[in-house]
Length: 289
Image (tube, rainbow, N blue to C red; front, side, top):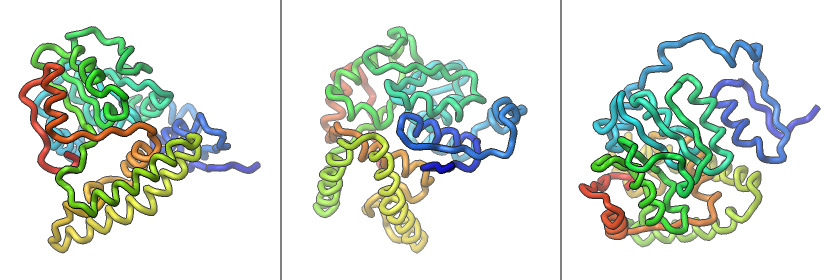
């Protein structure tokens, strides 16, 4: 018997990969030495309810840590693979994970040890969350793929209690980058427009090649130069120098697999946020901006 892909190990990573490929025509095999009952009902492990120091550092860096606690209820719009939900959920009472596509199934195996995640296959237009009910919300790398970004942002804000924080990451217009950097982005954008029109299986396959042959080498090169005290902030993809290959893979798919991509200047983002009722707006000083 022959397979297109063989996944060794039915842990969270292996099952997540299998789930992400379930809608393709690929023939997939998962090899696991344990019996199904042993890994589907694992024994209690205290490490699963604790945040690592690195997770806490990430939450602090993106400005979330001080706004959430064990009584907080919030939402993750466009949760994708659940990488942000996995960081936030252990610190809050409830986290609504929303995604309109079948990718909502991907984070479930990774988050089975957390009983406070509520998964909803909903778009920003159909979110089953009461207005003025959430203590916090965030949407990272999603709203710029929606045709009317401002309207989508407005609907997110409507779910928040008055004064509740909202964290958003939008693609920025590269206004602080040199000409050569913008030229490289322009070339990559032409490539994105072509790849995004392909069937999902091809989009996924090509994005993984890009992550391996472009993202990973450039990120590791930036990491090496950083060790020798070089300023790598202007290196292409240098923001991935301390990130995992898994993150590069998911981001490459997000970048090259989506047909619609909008970019905004910091002034446009601030104006848009103020017009939907947000105030006290702060921008991150380092990448991702």
